[in-house]
Length: 168
Image (cartoon, rainbow, N blue to C red; front, side):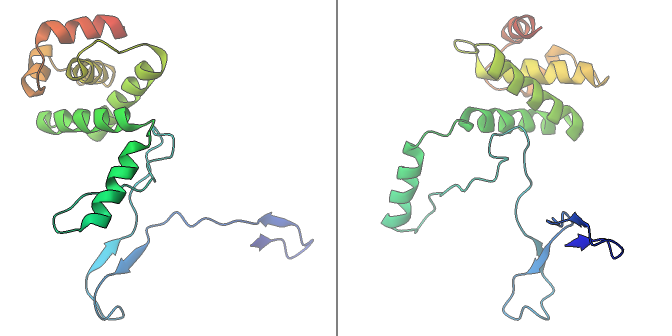
């Protein structure tokens, strides 16, 4: 709580510390030398900011964890397709050695296209590739469609070109 000492006016009632929070996960927390960042990064492109919980199926988890995971997957996650697309775009960007700003721009383009236009019936891989191609051009780091096609999965230059024309 921040307030003025002169007049008592409350300047800020809720203070959110956005600095890095570090915590040590060891048996002896006071002297542990293993600081770990707590919490994942937020993603403003997703509806919930990317802060939802996912119950995963692991080996030797037991039937309760498997059942919970199955029940969670039955519910509809409106951002499921976006999450999968962002992962595919990130994978291609990593293979090409692109900077994070290009990857983020490609994610924005994909989100905008998914919201505004129907992408049903089009190759998902070609759409991801076309978004990455456009992002490279917009960020003045152009790559050829051949280069992007080389790192894309299950698509060809012709499909990427069609999706590029559809987006533009």
